[in-house]
Amino acid sequence: MILVYINTLNGIGKSSYEAVTYAKKMGDSVVVLTNGNEEESNLSSLGDYGAEKVMIHREITSFESGQICDLISKVAEQHGINTIVFSHDHVSKAVAPMLSTRLSAGLVPGAISLPDSNGHIDVNVFSGKAIAKVSINSDKKIISLLPNSIPLEKNETTCVVEDLSLDLCEAKIKLLSKKELEGDIPLPEAELVVSAGRGLKGPENWGMVEDLAKTMGAATACSRPVSDIGWRPHHEHVGQTGIAIRPNLYIAAGISGAIQHLAGVNGSKVIVVINTDPEAPFFKAADYGIIGDAFEVLPKLNESMKKFMAQNN
Amino acid sequence: MKILVCISKSPDTTSKISFSDQNTKFDESGVQYIVNPYDEWYALVRALEIKESVGGSVTIITVGTQADDPIIRKALAIGADNAVRVDAQPSDAFYTAKQLSEYAKENAYDLILLGKETINYNGSQVGGMMAQLLDMPFISVASKLEVNGDSLTLESEVPGGIEVYEVLTPCVVSCAKGMAEQRIPNMRGIMAARTKPLSVVSPVDCQNLTSVVSYELPNEKSECKMIDPDNMDQLVDLLHGEAKVI
Ligand SMILES: Cc1cc2nc3c(=O)[nH]c(=O)nc-3n(C[C@H](O)[C@H](O)[C@H](O)COP(=O)(O)OP(=O)(O)OC[C@H]3O[C@@H](n4cnc5c(N)ncnc54)[C@H](O)[C@@H]3O)c2cc1C
Image (cartoon, rainbow over all chains, first blue to last red; front, side, top):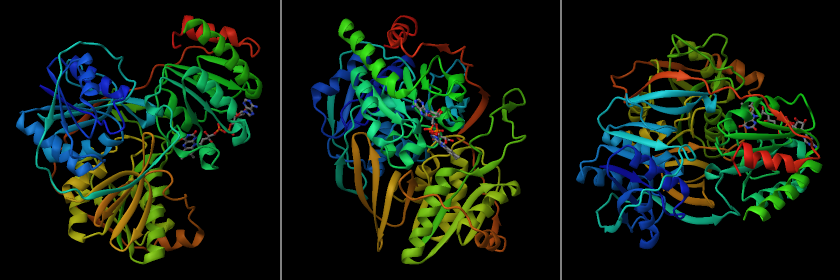
């Protein structure tokens, strides 16, 4: 039996279904563990991807890494579980290493493949500039799956939802408040991303980026200098020192394509580059290139996209 | 406040990445090492700011060999008081966390800071492992940290918002953008760093939990197809029909 831990405090995202798909493809039965207030009817949707059971601990309602670690390790022990799968998100980045230490279970953070016949798993290293094959030396194993790494696969399974009561260690992290951000689509999960750089000259020109993103149902991103000078929020900064993403489509306007930027986006399936400078290094990493002024190209692309959307939806 | 900052080396961000020994080893020839940016820009600088406002000390620690002394001196030049090097080759995250924790355990720090990940292995593992080994709370990917006596207020970006937490020291915090601004060491700092104490300690026995079997480079992109800026309909057609991404 494989245990998948998912974070449902912000709803059930696509990456949770991916983690269940991944575990199911490993060939064993899959049970899911989570915590919070998510409704039973939503939780049972995990059965569409192969989960037989969802266990939910309703008392942990905030991101308390110590208690979540305690919860997973107690459940794993009770059920004699040797393999635990996470989605590589902000919760797993805190909890999976704690759990790895507690269970003496080797951890593969940011897996992008299933284990091969030798049990080796691919992960991105050097911020996307290379891939490493990692082997886990311990009997117990923890795999944290990078979002957008494997296609979702339905596997209709009858899924029961069970409320868990378990005594847990004391909470040490107190959630004081939460500020909601205007976030439409979380960037790491987005399949389509429209991104822009210093070539856009100022924050007042981002309307055309947002318009295109809205038409396409895409998330927005930016280069590092753009977030450093405060034109855009930090969480949009992609690259070697920002977040690494691997959407199906990455459209970059007014970004030169410095090696540090490419590192965070070269896992994208298809890259479109819009730049006035035919020598911009980004063209070397692009699938489709447009030599032109973003101020003219983006609105035109938006119009064409709108037409396409109207015909296809 | 007694602060320990864990630093790691990482290849300069412009390094060309290649491998040797049948793709089993990172090829270090011609590679310039830097302090991992998350450790330097955010963890170390925030530690120095805290020391400047409430007093205390900032110690940096790394697991590495003598070849890593230049990055230790760089961190000292930015302003850390003293440095510790655990004399070993860091072979996996658990091994590294174990070495760092052993030292931390004996020296009772109020706060342990490190970057949210390294830019070579991107694992985000060491902080959580240390927290578990030291039985301390762990706040990951924090973008703000304020000290009020023995309690800390922290902010973390989560999907859809920012969460604000309170936690008591001692604790472990992994640091992300927003926490501080990069500091460039000045001449005085660089001179002072030469004589700041650097102690070298022996590693403890520890088994790796994981190992890297081999590396590979991502597939080269095929030729870029150029599209006329006045023909965005064609781009949309290609994205739909050829690339099949919309
Ligand atoms: C340690 C380190 C880490 C770094 N990490 C990151 C990172 O994580 N992410 C990141 O993005 N960067 C990172 N950088 C910075 C990186 O080196 C580049 O400086 C940065 O990516 C450049 O951003 P840009 O492309 O937006 O700006 P620029 O380099 O200024 O490029 C602007 C581009 O816009 C084009 N342009 C101008 N006007 C127009 C127009 N009207 N229409 C279309 N195109 C136009 C120009 O031809 C140019 O190519 C890092 C640097 C270092 C040293």
